[in-house]
Each structure stands twice: as structure tokens, then as C-alpha cells.
Length: 100
Image (cartoon, rainbow, N blue to C red; front, side, top):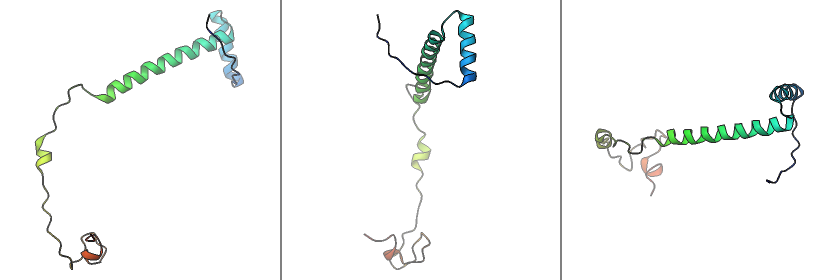
């Protein structure tokens, strides 16, 4: 026999009435109905979580990245120490981003 733990559950009155009506139609006590509903919900959430992680992983053998994107090199002119910094601050490069 499994151990049980007492839980005080607060429900809005309309939800309690609805749950009581459904439990009565199923021939269950309100307590048994709530236990079953929680078990169903946690099982559903676990399945949903597993499916989510499977889709986020993607295919087991992903396609290699195209080489064209990796081979693009941007040519930037070298900035002299006494020229204005390319960031647009107005300072000389050596006093702005050219600091060691």
C-alpha cells in the first residue's frame, strides 16, 4: 500500500461545483476525481515535455553548414592612431578603441 499525504486544496467555488458534478457523474468522490485529474495532467505534461525536447534537438545528423557563409571576409581599412575612431565618438582612435 502506498503512503498518502494530506493536501489542503483551495478551489474557486465555481470550479469546485463543476468538479463535484463531473465526479458524481463518474461515480467518484471529489477527492478521487481530483487525484485522477492531477495524474492525467502530470502524465500529459510529461509527454508534452518529451515531445518538445525531441523537436528542439532537431535531426540526429544535421546537415553541414554551407561554406559560402564561412568564406565571406569583410575588408576593413586599417585605422591610424591619430585618425578619428570609426565608432563615431569623435575621439582619436588611440584614445578610444585603440587602447591596448
